[in-house]
Length: 68
Image (cartoon, rainbow, N blue to C red; front, side, top):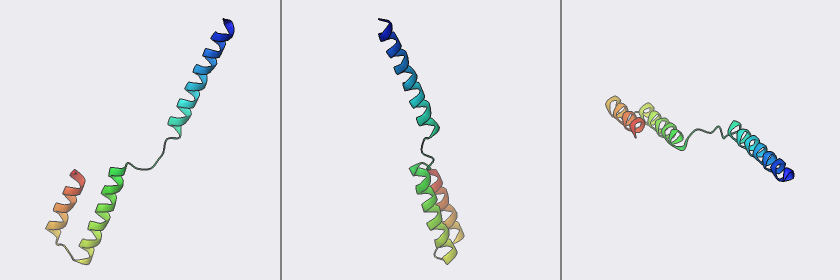
């Protein structure tokens, strides 16, 4: 019975250690929606810089991207 209790305690400690190690090394990549916003804003900035869209259209599209 004592061996069973020791095995349970060790299993709990291993579980806690692995869970804390996993959260400490969680992926540091930005969320997909953040990447999509960044890509959309970058493309929008390029279109504005090339003169394909005017300032009002640029600002409206930028608001749309950031809200959605």
